[in-house]
Length: 330
Image (cartoon, rainbow, N blue to C red; front, side):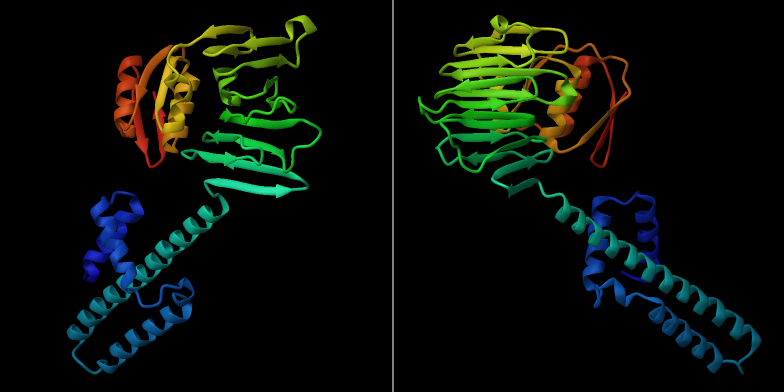
């Protein structure tokens, strides 16, 4: 790649108009740079290059004026390209460095143990399977937070779903109930499998029983008689800001399909659909559409992001645009 091509490519890169092929070409050029440490691209290097350029001009000072002027123009242009290339290299390498730092600071899964408690946190586009000491298994969905004691004691097995969604497959222990706490509910089982979805942005909690039997306690109920509800297999408790309803479901895919990477909706609100897309593909959605009354039903298996968006937007009669990892709905 000569200087002219490089300068053209770097200008396009700075404007954000390069294609994937051009980006690959820039990456190859960067890999050929001998010193990739951005500290080597400093003022000292630039001064050295300018000194060399001036020396070449001085060596030709006694030549005809016309030649001298043309030489200055050519050398000045070469120096400009050199400076532009150096600064561009610094910019690109710095961008690489910052991107690596960002990934290091924000891992897809965060796991830590502190003062006897175990904490888990997943990013968008990430799921995590957690095996507990008692044999229970938790599959934590994207954008979720969970914590529990490092050791269960006192015939109790408490787990706290602070945010998000998780599927719990509980090891049987009749003497030690397994209880999952969210902001509003406490769901207790002896040996069963159930799914809890509790994302703040959806303003809704759903507790779905796959098999076994669970007792769901509303910790904010005004009357204790109404506080506890028993769920049987394929029953679901759905609570929003205004009401608590008991429903049933036949197809488990709509509840647990996310564990296998499926994107499944049944009468889903706009918030549920957008949140599902963000978590599945690791993107951010900005909504400028006034159409917010959704009841969307559909399932996506291995379809790419654009195909999912095209299908949903066509159904809901809205439009979208994609810039990097940001989707704008309008």
